[in-house]
Image (tube, rainbow, N blue to C red; front, side, top):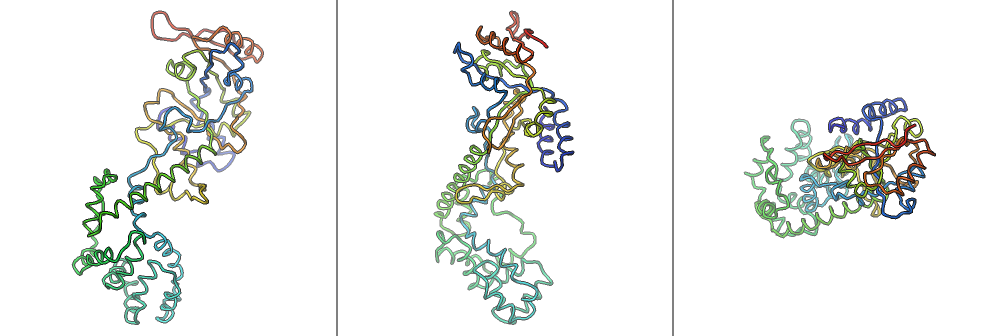
Amino acid sequence: MKPSKAKYVVEKLFEVKSDEDFFKYLSMKFLDNKKIYKYCPVDENPDVECNYSIKNLLNKSVYLSMPSEFNDPFDASIGLSDQVIYDQIMLGMLNTEYLDKSNVDNLKISKDSFSTYHKFKKAVSDMDISLIKDMFSYYAESEERYNELIYLRSNTDGREIMLRFLSDEEYAKRFFSNLINPELCSEDTINKITELLNAENIKKLSEPSLQIPLISANQKENLFNKDVLYAQVESFGLDKQIVDDTMGKMQESLINMAKKMAEFIGHNIGITCFSETHDNPLMWSHYTNKHKGFCVEYDIDMLIKNNPKTAGQLLPVIYLDTRPVFDKNMISAINIKSGKPVIAEDANKYFTKVLVTKAKMWKYEKEWRLISKVDEGRIVNLNCITGIYLGAKASIDLIRFMKNYCLKEKINLYQYSMDIKTYKMNLNTILTF
């Protein structure tokens, strides 16, 4: 399946809202693929039925593996975007509780609270420590400032309200003392920051043209380069030790999150892999013990009839040059509670994309994946087998076993052989029904 079609198929999955939509989706998804194939290894044991691949065949089932068991270490793993790294650095430097409470406290400042100066002052004094409390405390200092706030709310954007507040040294110090992570904060740091808030710099901050990010685009590419961060921090008159401290906190936080997500996926999600083709020599070499195993053919129409839910869990792999990365949407959808990730419903599409994305070097596999939660175990029934393909080096014992099995089950049986003149594989029919 072409990359654009594969992406489309994965995106459309999350638009299915009804049974009618679901079966329309299945028809669209399998329009060009009526069969899928699973390559299976067999070892040298003459007792063929000892092989787990044969046991799965006899049970008409497949095993859902943990993603960590895949041979590609990049498979089903998440990278980190430079924006997320930058955000984590900022979070390491900032007191997030101080910022988080601002959203809640903002709701407490109702229109009624603004109706008189005394009501406004009382509402501000009842707040918990937060950005909003610190900023409004400045305007609650006197009725004159309160009237100024009322005017600014009606005639300017929020920037002017914030800048008036920062221009007062006492309130600016209080603001930065609460804003900076307490473990990194010191009186010297606060003094250095507030020294930057002179009249000239305040004026610059008030200019609408000030849209330049703290870290430029080309610097973001080297965010893990401490020299870049040192230069940025020193430009604000701060100690370079802040970089070392926050980098340590950031790396610990990200590694912890990555480990917990890997554990969550490993314990809760299972994957088994198929291909669109049965005639790829590389697949035979890699996944059937050097052509000694076999390949199972599954009929899609039969699968939809017997088990539509399983058909819905089959998705084509998307082959890209870049890895899926943690972004703000994904991180906001993850809540770590008691050491366990709790995934929001709308996060499923992010993690599904991670699980079906591989590097372009693997595109020769033309892979499809059956992805399922493993609440009820890692075995999935696939009673829709219509063919068996034997490898060119299949043993006499395996050939004998497959002949008996296919005769009993009325399944077509084929075997590949190596062409004597070219590097092609020739397909020979043994049994057809």
